[in-house]
Structure formats: C-alpha cells, structure tokens
Figure 1 (cartoon, one colour):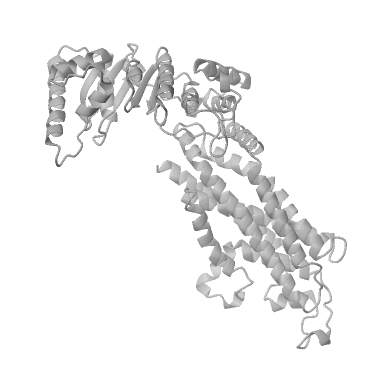
Figure 2: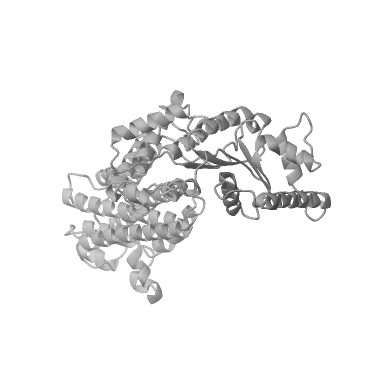
Amino acid sequence: MQDEMFHSTLTVREHLVFQARLRLDRQVNKKQCLDQANAVIEELGLTGCRDTQIGGWMLRGISGGEKKRLAFASEILTSPAVLFVDEPTSGLDSCMARAVVEHLKKLASKRTVVTAIHQPSSEVYALFDHLYLLAEGATVFQGPVCEAITYFAALGLPCPQFMNPADHFMEQLVVLERATDNEGLARVQRLKDAWTKRQQKHQTQQSNSDTTVQVSTWMTKLKSAADLVDVVVYEVEGREEDDFISTEYDYENSSLSLWGQVEVLAHRNWLRLARDPMAFRLQVLQTVIFSFLLGLIYFQLQVDQKGIRNFSGAFFYIVTDQVYSASMPAIISVSVELPIVYRELDVGLYRIGAWYLAKNLCELPSQFVLPMLNLIPIYVLILGFFGSPGFLVFMQMLTLLVAMNSSCVAFGYAVSCICRRVDIAPIVGNIVIMPLLLLGGMFVDPERVPVMFRWLELVTPFKHGYFGFMRAFWRNVANIPCNLEDTTAECTTMTGHDVLEGYNIPDQTIWGDVWSLLALSLFFRLLGFVALHLSVHHK
C-alpha cells in the first residue's frame, strides 16, 4: 500500500461501490454494496469528500491523506480479520500522518492491523500498541511500546529526555557503512545477541497459545535479510493461530461470475470515459483536421491519366493515417492503465479475461465513429458524395476503414500488453510499424519482396487496407479518358481493371481484404491477452 493507484475521474463513493461489487459475495445486491460503501466512508472519515473525484495528474481531487484512507477503505469492505499496511504515512506531512495512524488505530479496535512504518513522529509513535524492531533482518525487540525505552536503557542505550523514541531506536539500529562503522556493527550485534538470549531465557515459560509469540515468529518469516530497519505496529485481540493467519478473502468462490465482472468493469470504464472525454475529443479533432486537410489537397480529383497516381497516394495516406491514429492511443491507454490492473489482480479482484473483455467492449463504439468521421469529409471533397462512383463505394470504403481501425486498435493492445511500460510501448510500436509500412504495397512491388519477408505481408494492415481501397474504387471505374495532349506517353490504362493490373493488385472484391483485417484484429487481441495472461502469472 505504499503507492495509491486509483482511477482519477471516479468519485470516492463510486470507487468504493465498484470495489464492493467486485469483492463482496455474488449474492450481495447493488443496494447492499452501496450501503457497505457508505458505512466504510463513515468509519474512515471520508464523508466530506465522498462525492469528490479522486483526482490525479492534471486533475484536482482529494488530498494525500484521504487517498491513504481510501486505500484502507477499499481493503476493509470485506471486513477482513487482519489488515496489512505497508508505509501508510509515506509522502505525508506530520499532521496528515498522525490522522492516518489515528484511523488505523480505530480500525484495530475491530480487527488486527499490522503495519510497517519508517521514522514516525513522536505523536504517531505514542499511538502505537506494540513495537517490533528489526536490524539487518533480525529481531532486536518485540513487545509493548512502553517497555522499549526501558529495555534499551538496560542495554546501556538510554533515550535522551526530549528525543523522539523512534528516532533514537533508528540511530541505534542503523549501520551507516559496514566497511568503516565498526562501532555500529558491534552495537547492532550486541542488540541481536541480547534479544536472542532473552528469547531463549523465556522460551520454556511461554505457552504455545501466546499470540504475541505467534505474531513474532510469523513476522520474522515475512522479513528478508535485506530489510534494514522496520517499525511494525499491530493490535492483537487474543486470536488463536489459525484464526490469525486465515486472512485471505475467498474471491474465487464468492466473487462475481466472469460476465458479472465484465459488466461491473465495463460500467466503470464507461463512467471513466464519460468523465474524461478529452482523449476522445482530441482523437475526433485530429481525425477531422487531417480529413479536411487531405480532402482539400486532393480536392475534386479527376479520373484521368494524371489522376491515377494521385488517387493511389490519397488512398495510401488514408490507410497510413488510420494505422497511426488508431494504434498509438490504444498503446498508451492500455499501458497507463496496466499498473492499476496489476494491483487489482494481485488481490484477486477479478479475472484478467474480464478486464480485457470489458476494455475491448467499451472501445468498440469509437471504432465505428472515428472511421466515419474520417471518411465523410475525404469522400465528399475528393470524390463528391452524390456523383460517381456513388454511395456503394462509400459504404465499401467505410467497411474497410472500420475493419482497419479495429485491427490497428488490436495491434496497439498487443504491443502494450507485451511491453507493459508506457515509455517503451510506443517506441516498440513504431519499430514494428515501419517494416509493415514498407511492405504495404505502395513503396515496393509485391513481386519484388524477398521470399523470406513475404509472410509479413499477411500481417500488415497497410497492404490489406490499401489494396481494399484501390479495389473498391477502381473496380467501379469502367473508362479512364485519355487526352494525348496532356500526356507524354501513349495511354495504356483505359479502365479501372488496367489500373489494378498496373499496380499488381489482383482484380477481386474487397471482402477478402475485410476478412483479412478482421482476422488480424482477432489475432492481435488474442496475442495481447496471451501476453497479459503470461505476465500476470509470472510476476
């Protein structure tokens, strides 16, 4: 719980309601989830910000202390017997840190709370019940807070009168430089030996049902030898050992079904998108601007000998723009969201397949809207909507563009799920796109491509989209006028079929290209899911 990661556009109550729906028993209805969320909000003092957006980068929201408490609230929705908290005061000022620990102390009245905390203030230290000190991975003290100062004083390490006890303990337990700090090494070794002797002395007197010993033994197993110093607070209520360690909430048996999880996650995604429409608005703005720019550059192209090359260039640019404008936002959006997904998967909040399916379903509408906004200005400005070649060609091109957008978004999912890092995924995406662009059918004659690289033509959306656009248009052109005064060579391209033959494009319908793009969409989505599944299970 060192880093709090939330969806910034959700409110505090919405976040807890979604958490409750995913965590609580599948028999719990939405009204009960809302009631549980409200109860936790009251318990942790979040009433004043319950309807405030959580906030994040470039979005003002709740304070750092409230985010800490919201993280606690998410975990106690299921009323766990034990709550583990790692560094709850990191990044907070002294006042906020005290408020957070006070809330933890209240939580400890109903459950066991175990927390690791570094350099607490004297006021925070006074709130502790039990203290557990480690030095170089070994226990040097464990017991009531009031006994710690006396114990250290008995070892010749008294705490100065006006010094924070926590700071004093830290000074005694830290070795600044192992190669030169011989005094520190000797001091720490003396503390470890003293505690070992004390434990051996009292070992025969301690009962097997002593909860304090159970906690001490169990916590020692949790800490690695690399841990230098930790201060751990816990409140124990005399539970038996089996009751104490049985803390895992059984999500697999009691959580929502797969489709129930998809419903909740899809609802959460829709709400996030509705609250933060800036990304979609920018995509729309980019689409419209580039569409009008392309339409004005190629305004009212004529179907003649000179227009053949212009049409070819316009079609390939449409395809290229679609690949980049669809894949890059997908690469970034998934990479940004993955840290939260990993955190929620770690606690068994949902299945990875549920999140992936919900993510895909929520972005389907944009994969229809954006291609339409892209094509309409281009088609009207370049070809004229009501003239030749007509509405049928428009629908064919729109079908191709939708299939292209879907395959490119899927490509973005695959790249981001394989790379997982937002700083690396866009670079890798560009590295992969460049050879696919080269083999898109515009720059290199397909017959000139070396055999060893021809398999790449099967997975490049550039080629399927470009060939599809060329076929959709030129198959509907029966005659290309030839004006010898305007040409420097004899006219050899008289029909749309001749154009396709000149570009080594088989004269076929567009449906082969459409199905190829849809197959790529399915392939890339499956590839992304497999990569995500493997990364989750090998963490």
